[in-house]
Image 1 (cartoon, rainbow, N blue to C red):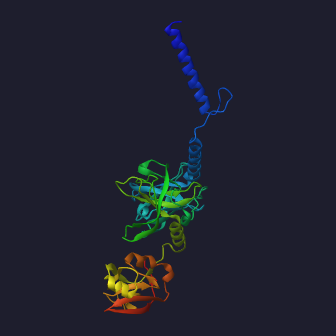
Image 2 (image 1 turned 120 degrees about the vertical axis):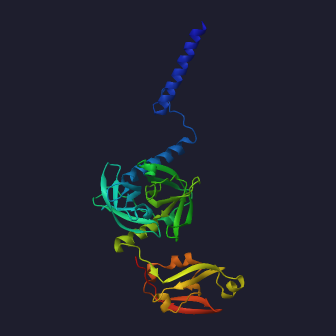
Image 3 (image 1 turned 180 degrees about the horizontal axis):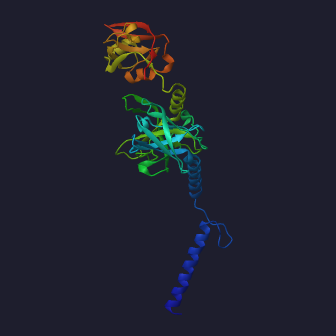
Length: 348
């Protein structure tokens, strides 16, 4: 037999092998036998199925938010997601703050005017509403139960590419980010699910399609360092804005900075930290002024909570302290002084 005939038989065998492999891939065994499956394939299938199921469940509730000026010209964009059937969406404060007009576009082709209900720059969260009933909503998970290493999916509109899904894991918990106003945002999740401009305000979800966070920031130039505000913070902000139109916080009426204490003084005071809060100024007529605090006082504790710095003071200024007598402990002229004061609601 010539080389040509041998080559034809080899070609036929190769083509038959390729056909057999194609049938095995689509689940139809060529010879009646089940196709062999590699050791990692079942894990890959389970992972893929989880990603697909979560994305299909959540994507219909994720909107592309287009920020426009009064003439309808685009001024920015971001993402948001529906959390109540009557059309309330969570997003980022930095996406919609000061927006004149907001237009929401959904995967089903619906485009609607959206309206800013309220925002909270301190947590970089905001609530907007579309005036139609939305059939799909995203459940907010308990972010306190999130674990490092669990699946995390980001769904949003990065760089104008609508309704994009990226997958990763939760890389760390309990991070803090400095917000636009200079205050720390707590309960921040770190993930390597890719986030880009336009993802801001979209959901970070788990394998069951529940939002564990609201995508908010990336570190430019870094790989796999992306952040989301925890769902528990989002739930609190959502409730406050729906009830009051804003997030209520208490107010003392002071300007302050974090300063270092000499080690011997910190030990003598049993302060537990080498830093404290020094008052730079006290607003006349404020709760701090009425309690007799003056510039130069070193705040050591408020309501029994040690103050290691200004960030610790900000964390304590919640609505729970409004109109409630609390004790402030401070150092003045080498002596520890205790006074009672009553914080009031912060304006705005």
